[in-house]
Length: 169
Image 1 (cartoon, one colour):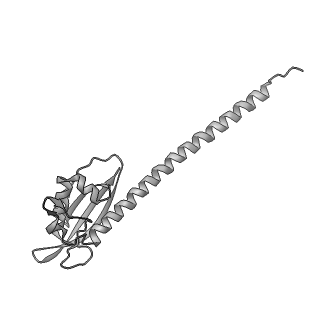
Image 2: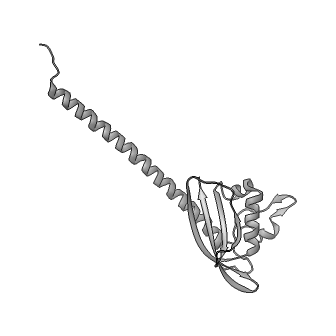
Image 3: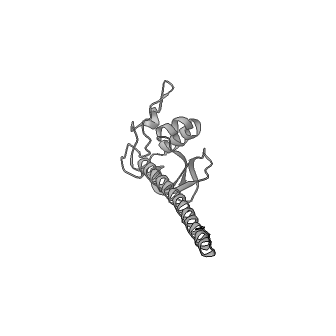
């Protein structure tokens, strides 16, 4: 007996190979889409964590803005922008904001080390969107913006401000 491949078998084979190829490509596409969504969620989570620490904690040591360099060595273990004199969440120290952005600009390697390797740009604005202070050291391709509201004391008056934290890969 001689085996012959008929037209029906050839059409069936082509349809089967097409279906398997389509399924493989669809799974590959969905996998990369899910991976991108997961990476975005990780960035968002890191950004929210960093912004929460900055706005709800005084840092360690609590007066790091006054003693952040002793004998040329940084003493900052954890950034926090809360004014330690009032110790209220979201009430920030202007001096800490200025020193935070100064460290970011002048010593980005130490800045990233304190932030556990996170790459961020940060902008502080008053309620009229005038810049209080900022640090922009990275150009990101993929990034997330986290916007938070805070208060600060200037000339014995409590004022409102906005922090925009940009975190990226």
